[in-house]
Amino acid sequence: MLYRDVVDIWDHIYKPEQFQESTPNDFFEFEYQCLPHMEFQEDQFNEQIKALKAKFDITSPNSFYP
Image (tube, rainbow, N blue to C red):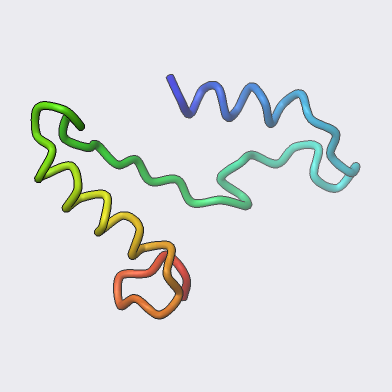
């Protein structure tokens, strides 16, 4: 459902002529992350949030950035 929303937004935004038939996948890579419950599994939640945060750090070995 989330991806369907992204596609719907993509279909309704302005795009230059050469990108009219493009899809979000032509420009983005999508990855979904499930997290433990913040209140009931606080320790596991905090560990996974720390790991997710590291993916946005360009110096991290598990970074999203090449």
